[in-house]
Length: 207
Image (tube, rainbow, N blue to C red):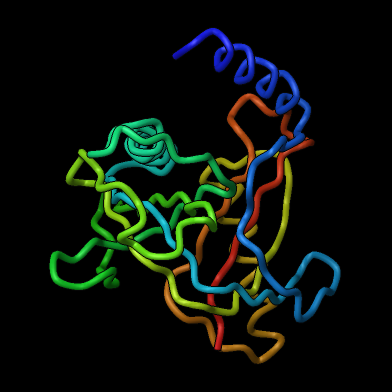
């Protein structure tokens, strides 16, 4: 890593400690409904780099983050660096299938977690991205979908995420929407961001 990049990362780290995301691309969406802390969003198709990790939620998030970060920071056959985006996605009970993109699988006792980084929009097809060196990292396309989303700040511990997820699912049921698949947790900030400035979200795909 050259001196200039070290300085840039250090500067971004200082800014992000107060919760500002500088120059980090986020997936585009259209807001269909906004009521208090509930949003209904429509996302376009997007490419993601993902991995599946077993273990407790926070340890799995850290391990998965390191795997996929390794890919975007040059751990690929072109030694290409891929720009960091936000959010990082964590979902429970997902497994990568060898012959299909992603399939739902029952969570084990310890839990399985799917960790995703959304790829920059300049990459249009899976083939446009470099192939990961780590076989546990895979590039897949997420189809267009609608998500019910609840935003919160502060702790992103498993208990905090569980409380927010329960509130989201209550709101979804009250609207008469049908959830599809497992709820997701989206984290937009690095761990050192002060809790009150963090942008965290829980989401679930709905019909």
